[in-house]
Image 1: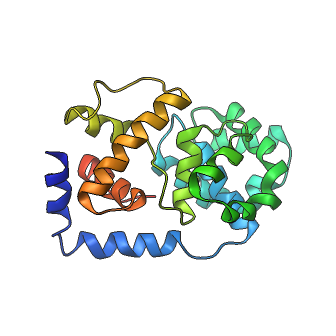
Image 2 (image 1 turned 120 degrees about the horizontal axis):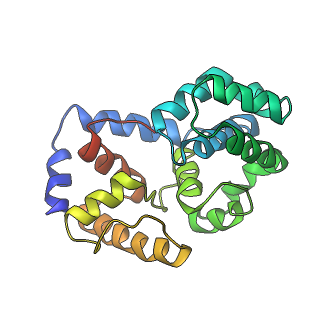
Amino acid sequence: MLESRIKQLLENKELVPQIEARMAEFSRGRDWQELFSELCFCILTANYTAEGGMRIQQKLGFNGFYKGGYDELAQKLAANGHRFPNARADYIIDARKVAKDLPRVYDFKGKDARIWLQGVKGLGMKEASHFLRNIGFTDVAILDRHILGLLAEHDLILKMPKNMSRPQYLETEKVMEGLSDRTGLDLARLDLYMWYLKTGKLLK
């Protein structure tokens, strides 16, 4: 069973401290500039890779995301190897309109903050959940292909969906909440353990 595999990881004396250190990093305070940079990272990872998004985030930084026009940003994303430089440049520039208001997310619980974020172009349920987890929220699930694949492999969902509507996302999130209860892990930690179980990597 999946929960047994996760519980075995909880006995890994090297992995557990790494995950707790990552959680501590997520929960540290951030100003609006750092929040915007992290939001852009999550926009970049959609239909791309976390490694690629991290690389571009480190390369461009806040100024690269926040300053300059569409053409300049699209060129930077293309030069750094993003699959969809034009669309992501459009999304990031649109996200600038909420940049200085991003600290407001801390006024909500995770699921309510996620609803507020749905007004950002290119930020679906998964990307909004990813952003919230990366800035310290522990009550939303990031249902990416790795997590969905594990759930499908262990018959916790019928099959791995190609696209998910909001109701489907919320229904599958309840499956994750059940697994959270059985393992004693909040959704943020559960994601990290499941991601490691599927990929052997610990990213963000």
